Length: 608
Image 1 (cartoon, rainbow, N blue to C red):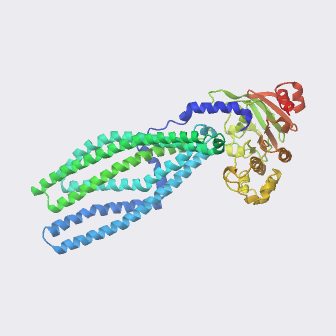
Image 2 (image 1 turned 120 degrees about the horizontal axis):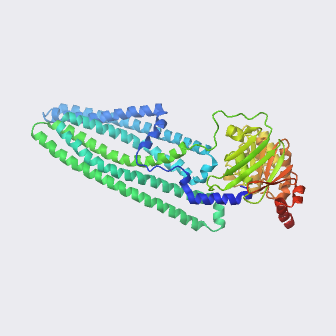
C-alpha cells in the first residue's frame, strides 16, 4: 500500500477494531441441527460411496435385529426341551450371523469413512473457492486466522461427523426403531412402558441440548479467535522479534487459548449433565421393565425365550438410545461448524459480473475516464476517500498521481482494479463503464505492481506466470530481464530458483523486481505502479526505471509516486488533495504554480 493513504487506512483499521465481526452477518446461535441438512449435497453427489454405505448399514441393522430371534429359538427350542442338537445348531447360526456382521461392519466403516473424507475435501475446496472470490472489503472484518480455522478445524469436525457420528446415528436410530417395533409385537404392555417413559426422558434433555449447541458454537468461535491471533503474529514474525514482542504476543495467544478453554469447560459441563441424566433415566427404566417382564413370565404371558428376546431388544434399544445422545452432542458441535462455513459459502462478492456483461473492445486501447467519482470505505463511517474525482487519461499516456498522505492515491488504484466500486460517478475503460463489465475481463486489462511485493511459495517462473499463466519460458525470462531480475536468478537456478515462503529467500529489492517482471509478463493495456522502485537501491532503481519506461511504451501507465524525482519524465502529473484533483501539469509548470506540488517538491529537493 502506498504511503499516500496511510491516514485513510488508519481510519479503516480503527473502524475494524470498533466494529469487529459486526460487519459480517450475525452468526447463528446453533439452536437447532437444521444446518446439518447443508451436508446433503456433499454426500448425495457421491452416490458410488453413499449408497453402498447406506445399504451395508441397513444389512448390519437387519443382522443385529435377527440375533435375538436366534437367542429365542435356542432358549425355547433347545434349552427348555433339553435338545442339544437344537442348541448346537442355534449357536452355529449365531456364529455365522456374527461373522457376516463383522464383514458388513468393516465394509460399512470403509465406505462411511471414505464418504466423510470425500465430503470434507469437497466442502473445504468450496469454502476456499468462495473465500478467494469474495471482495477484499470482506477481509477487513474476517481475520486470516479465522478464515483458516474454518477451512481446517471446522471442516475437520464435519469430516469426523460424516465419517463416524453420522453412521452411528443412522445405525442406532434404525436399531432403536426396529427394536421398539419388535418389542411391541412381542409384548405391547411392556413396550407401552417405554412410550410412557420416553417423553419424561426426552423433553428435559432437549432443554439441555439447546444449551450444549449454543456453547459448542461459542467454543468454535473462541478457537477461531486464537487461530487469528497466532496467524497475525506469525505473519509478522520479524517485526515481533525486532521489537521484542515475543512474550507479549505469546501472552495474548495464551489468553485467547484460556478463553477457548473456559468456553469448552462450560460446554463439557452441560454435556456431562446431559449424559448423566440419560444414564439415570435409562437404567431406571430398564429396572422397571425387567421387573414387569418377570411378572409377565410368571403369569405365563411370555415364554423364557420371548423374555430373552425382549431383553436383548431392550438392551439394544437402550444402548442405541445412549449412543444417540453422544451423537447428538457431536451433531450440535458439527451444526455450529457448518454454520460458520455456511457464512462464507452464502456470502456474495460485492463486485460481481452483471447478468449480461458488456464486452471490452479488442484490441485494448487503455483509455481511462473518471467522471465525478465519489467513494467511502464501508467501514470508515462515511468519511470520503474520493470526493468528486474527474480525470481523462489518453491511451499510451503516462500519468503520475502525487499528493499528501490520505489524498486518495491508493484508493484510485483499488477502484481501477475493482476491489471496490464507486458510491457515485463512473469509471470507464475504453468507453465501457466498470459496473457493466465482467470483473475478471476488466482486471485482465491491468498490470499491477504494489508497493510491497506479494510473492507465493514456489519458483521464480511460477510467480511471473501469476501475471500470465500462458507465458513461455522465453517470455518469462524476457520479463525478468526487463525487470533486472534475471542477473541474480541466473546465478542461482534460473527460472527454477526457489523463492521460499512469501519470497523470504529474496531480498526486498529482489522481491520487487520479480513482482515487476510479473506485471511486465501480463502485457496489459494499463500498468499500475505503486511506488514500484521504492525497494531498490540507486543503481537498480535507474535500471528498472529505464525498463519500466520501455515497457510503458504503447501502454497507459499510472504511477503512484512519493519520491518526485522518479516521475519528472511522465507526460502528466496529477496532484490529489482531499480525494479530488487539485493540480495537474508537468513538473516545471506545477512548480511555477506554487501550490501543493511546489510545496512537496520544495520539501523533497531542498532536503536532498
